[in-house]
Length: 65
Image (cartoon, rainbow, N blue to C red; front, side, top):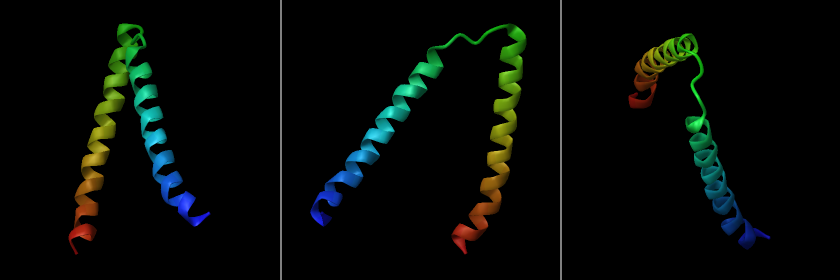
């Protein structure tokens, strides 16, 4: 059983990544919708990136320490 897990765990990891890329491509192909929906989506994306930038600034202190 232990020998099987050595191959099974990375295989499922690769399958998970492939599924993620497939679903990501599907989402990217979908229509944006109306102009208002596009503006809202961009505002959400900008806010998310601002949050991540602030989060990484805090986390870098703990990573480097």
